Image 1 (cartoon, rainbow, N blue to C red):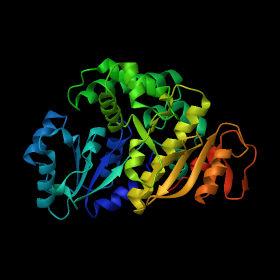
Image 2 (image 1 turned 60 degrees about the vertical axis):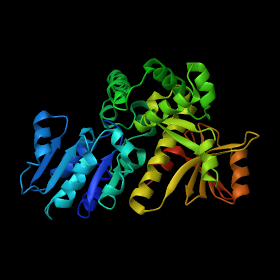
Image 3 (image 1 turned 180 degrees about the vertical axis):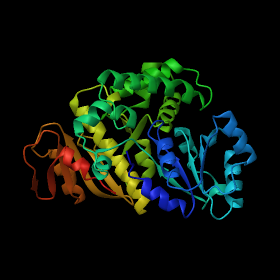
Image 4 (image 1 turned 90 degrees about the horizontal axis):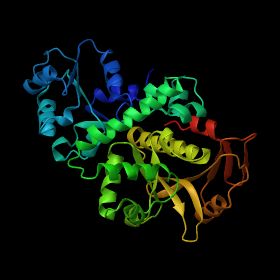
Amino acid sequence: MKRLQQHYIIQDLKKKMVVITGPRQAGKTWLAQNIASTYGNSTYLNYDDQDHRAIIETKAWLHDTELLVLDELHKMPMWKNYLKGVYDTKHKELNILVTGSARLDVYDHMGDSMAGRYFRHRLLPLSLSELHYIGYQATLNDLLARSGFPEPFLEHDEIEVERWRQQYFASLLTTDLLEFGSINHINSMRTILELLRRSVGSPISMQSIARDVKLSPTSVKKYIDILEALYIIFKVTPYSRNIARSILKEPKIYFFDSGMVIGDIGAKIENLTAFSLLKYCYGLTDYKAQTHKLHYLRTKDGKEVDFALVHDQELIWLIEVKHKDKDISKHLKYFCNKYHVSGVQVVKELVSEYQQDEIQVRNLEDYLKGLAF
């Protein structure tokens, strides 16, 4: 299955080094090897492999290599300095592609040593928009049931999908988690994760979770930040023109795999919509140089809209997610009028689409398919 970003990556390799980050098992290695197959001479080296490691450390790949793929390189001591040296001394025909687990994204700000030498590409699980673009037939229900991670998505046995999910998160919460250093409360981390699975779509309180797991709010925040760095969850913060104020307010938590959500169909479709919008924002930012962010709106008296797309700190679109309700949300109307911005209410079970003033009522599946960057 071809990935949407393959074309962008190949184009960027002609200009600079490319670094692919994203969740484990999102398809980074497969994509890198597929790109490598388009070159006459390519070399794939994984730092986890002892023989490959020796080649990496001695820079002993063949001199006529056109594409060098370095996987899991962040596990190498002083890897940034090593990569800078390789890039600065490489021959003109050598292209470099670096891939790695989610932890590589922790080093997104690689420091001055790597400034101007690379393009970052965030490879996320499949979305309806990407599947539609590459011509793969899939439905909203397919993604809700199997997630967008390639292995379970292509698996049609429900038991095998669930086995994958259990093994996937067991691995993340053991092997990958320990890469971040000493975690003294593994059981607390699991409890936090279970609480978050039941809280999708609702603002979360660090103090409340801290009381439930008997940890300090600082520790809870640390563990949630690690879950985010591992691409298990992502935060959506309330919109405010004051960036600091937005960060301090209670975030909502969503999962990269909607199958992790424990709740009704409303929570699951809101989670999938959040993921699809996040991927859309990443695409506009990474490939169109249009900085987009995903937020939500909420007032002190409880008025709330699920999502707000923001470009350069200005609201450009408001989105409300519904399972069946075709009547336009009063809160969506309120915020659209207050901020003079267009809105859309996306509905999973919708007979016909319509528009009222600046607000569209759209079929959720069709809307998500159209989130192309």
